Length: 143
Ligand code: CMP
Picture 1 (cartoon, rainbow, N blue to C red):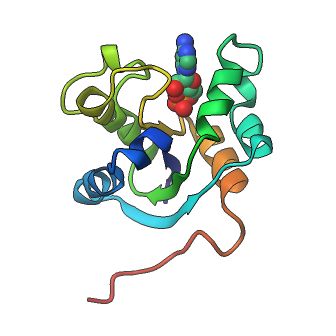
Picture 2 (cartoon, protein in one colour):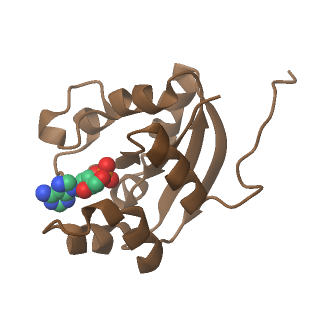
């Protein structure tokens, strides 16, 4: 089953949006298989955002993501990678449609509430980067 890495960024945590965001993915029908509230080291932030290393905003990006706890998650389901991206909305909240997470809750491209993997390759890379063995579960409904 397809899996993706999603992260509520420090702005989403501090604005008490974890519940709202988790609820949207639960109601869509995806399954939460990994989650943790954590502080992010500079090393992890730089590795996570390595593809943006040459961008002028790289330092700002790393400063922001290490500025307070994030809520890191792994979600599972049919086409979860692309569907989660649609539910998040465009990277720049100014372009994100109403009804999407960024469209409903954000105004700034830097503080855009949530990160989600953009491809199968990045989902695998990011899940392995953020979650250790045994932290991603596999379970069937029993009730
Ligand atoms: P994210 O999906 O986490 O992946 C890379 C992040 O870079 C992106 O969300 C934005 O939050 C951030 N970003 C993109 N463009 C800019 C910018 N011009 N200034 C600051 N941050 C940016």
